[in-house]
Amino acid sequence: MVAFDATEALTPYREGRGYGAILFDRQRLRQAEPALFSAAYWAERARPVDEGGRGGAWFVDAPFGASVLRQYRRGGLVAKLSRDRYLWSGADRTRSFAEFRLMRALIARKLPVPRPLAACYLRQGLRYRAAILMERLEGVRSLADRAHVAGRGAPWEETGRLVARFHRAGLDHADLNAHNILFDGNGRGWMIDFDRGLLRIPATRWRERNLKRLHRSLLKLRGERSVDEVNKDYARLRRAYDLAWNRGY
Image 1: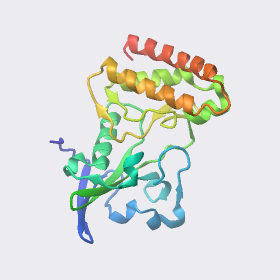
Image 2: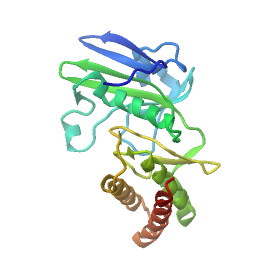
Image 3: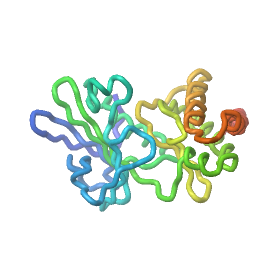
Image 4: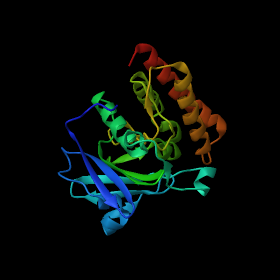
């Protein structure tokens, strides 16, 4: 059972033959409606997010602030069967509600993540679709972009320390890659995309799995840089990670 949070509000709704609910931050939104999760509703105030992901994400200029709308999409072979529908197993276990609450838990631990604003699902029979709205981070660039432009000058040590900080808090990120680590103009690091993430007791096995996934993404996105160059930069990241982890922060 999910603990009650007085700053959350829940609004049920019906749409056609389906029914759903919206979970939202009542400190940021006075009310929420299903239309908020449709890019068509925002019209010219929404523009697609180009970098990373599987599509289905937009930057939105909303009355409650600059936001990101993301509709949950499948990847891989399973996407050929159903691109945006998931098996129903309860409202609290929907991808959107789980990510919304995980992000709030990370913020409560004073970790640098965007603030979730609202999450919804629409159930039809044994399957559902979902979407989430979150605060947009202004003036940030991904590690993938920084590595492409700056190479050795990218924030490798800062990334290692950032990942160690999240791991120390128990975050097992399901898709830790160079698109999901961001830095602003002041060098402050952020992490995004917590779909399927979990808070766990820190353990070597899942931490190493996260780091290997990040390493693979850096190799995949290396562009004209050699494998040796990328491996040397990753070694800097890893040394900083190990030092921060061993120090306990």
